[in-house]
Amino acid sequence: MNPLVRHRSPIALAACGLLFFLLLALRLDWFSRPAPSTPGGQNPSSPHESWMVIEQAGRPIGHAHRRISPSAEGYRLEEASHMRLNTMGVVQAVALATRADLADDLSLKRFTFDLRSGLFNFSAQGSIQGKRLTVTAGQRTTELVVEPPLYLAAAVLPAAGRAGFAPEKVHRIMVFDPATLGRKPLEVRVEGREDLIVAGEAVDTYRLALHFMGVTQKAWVTPEGEVVQEEGLLGIRLRKVSREEALAAAEGAASEDLTRLVALPANRPLPRAREMSRLAVRLSNLPDGLALDGGRQTFDPATQRLTIQRETVGSLAASAPPAPETLLPSPLIEADHPLIRERVLSLIDPTDAPLLRIRKIMDWIATHIEKRPVLSLPSALATLEQGMGDCNEHAALLAAMARAAGIPAQVEAGLVYNEGRFFYHAWNLLWLDGWVTADALMGQLPADVTHIRLVRGEAAEQLDLLGAIGKAALTVLEE
Image (cartoon, rainbow, N blue to C red):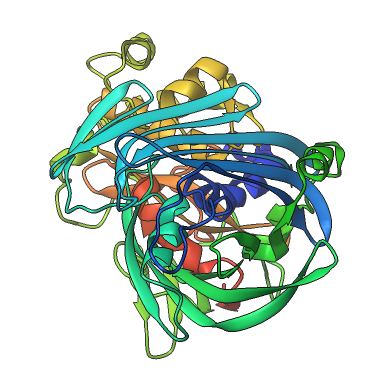
């Protein structure tokens, strides 16, 4: 057994799953929206401000505050959320803030986004001019060609409210995620009218269903356009309260152990999981479009049977050559940053074979990067500077260091077995005269066959995992 495997951290391993359902949702402002304009299409002529308590399983775990007000160009949006999240017994505070200038139709013009969690901070700023979107995330500026209008998720209900909340009406709106640069459609469906108890009084509301990437969110909105309640993933609910009650929630308890909630229990133990050469499972209740077939994985959609064969380094199967982008830097895989390049050059020799380069890099990561849960966006540079992270940070750092060493690298995400459960996890795919999996957090090259790939790509592609959370089912068939 690779000696690095014996020193893996079950806490850091299991905590990886949190990114794939909560932080992806949070950085889309999924749980924080201002009140919409009136259904009749009239624009609010004065600022609107609201406070919400964030609850999970009936107990307060944070609060959200948002304000939308008219401006010379259209509207100004300001919102902030604070939550205390439990990941494998480790409680961390997460704070998110979004400020945006919106056009008169509430589409995006400019924005700033900040995420703070412990020692990790992430920020992004951007603007749209015509069909050109410019975003600076971390230390990298990216320009994209887009088809306007684009909306922050925080402006979805205002935009839908302009057209009215008639029964059974459906609104389809393109949402932009400022952290991943992803652009995905969101559907708002009016389900009907419902009386909701707010502050002890019955309030007439429209009940809305918001469908995004296979996930359904509920919202209750008054005829005047005020959001009074929202319900989302894993029992998380926002409820309109007074400012005093919202701020008092900051002193409440943390969430339940969310990593345990999203993990899939194994129907039988796998005591030799790290040494197995083959694994067959049945995967069901998954969204369309996942990367289940290809490489070491074979998927039969008719039977939902997925078979994983372990690779052998040095005798890899022939495969398509790497695409150019697998050697290039990206906003969160800063392979060209001087600190990353200097670290890599200090570890490898120009005459080293690619396999030796990777082993040296993985040995250094195992020695110098502490394995601990981190609730932030997985930046390679931040991981190097802070010297800690879970699977997402390890995967980003290995990808960046491998690319800096001239080795094409990608990120894969899906499930991995640990102590009787399959947890959401991230690892890498490296080109060593053929593609081979590698797990820097677990010290595996190749990765064991319980690494079940669901998606391949960086943060934008990992949005596809949202539709699996809380729905996917897994049965071990053969080992």
